[in-house]
Amino acid sequence: MATAKKTTTKTAGAVKAKAAAGAKATGSGGSAKATKGAATRGTATKGAATKATATKAAATKGAATKATATKGAATKAAAIKAAATKGAATGGNTSTFEALRSILQRHARHLVVVHDTPDNYYLDTRTKGPNGKPLFFGATRVGRAYTSFYLMPVYTNPELLGDMSPELKKRMQGKSCFNFKTNEPALFAELEALTGRCFERWKASGQV
Image (cartoon, rainbow, N blue to C red):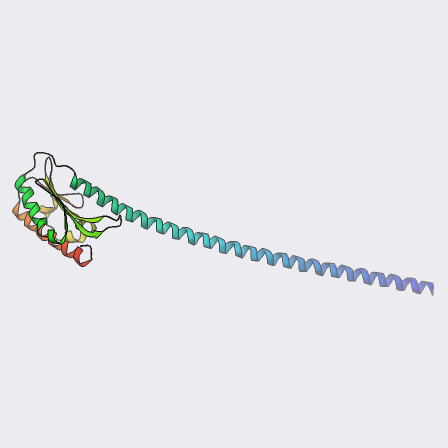
């Protein structure tokens, strides 16, 4: 009888130990599963944050590129404007200057005359550019070796030069300046027609 009781007690102890081990294993599995789930959620959150950072960086880069382009255009216009308003030196051809000034004067009533002297004639538009200052339209001034004619619309709209003659193209310096040593009626007539197209283009786009 004592032996049976002892055997029963031993068997009950083994069952209890097995049940405890099973519960421990189940608890460990659940804990591991929960830890893995948390890690997965953490990875997803980190991925979303990385994607948001990349999107923000791309937007910032795009805005910076646009700002740089706008600043570059304004700087170029300012440089051309400075060259046109720089004090004229001696040695220019008065008749050439007068002929070139007359081309610009045809549009003066729609623009703003900034300078009108014997060696410097300068026109702005009434429209403000990206830098908050009036857009420069055109000018002519007497220099040491040339009389220069500046026409800003051909810089912003180079397609206006599509049918320019090779002779007039030879007089170009940079993208918006034409230099002349003498009075050249045929080229001045072509330049007058080009100036008219420039004015109409800017008028149509609201820049004049």
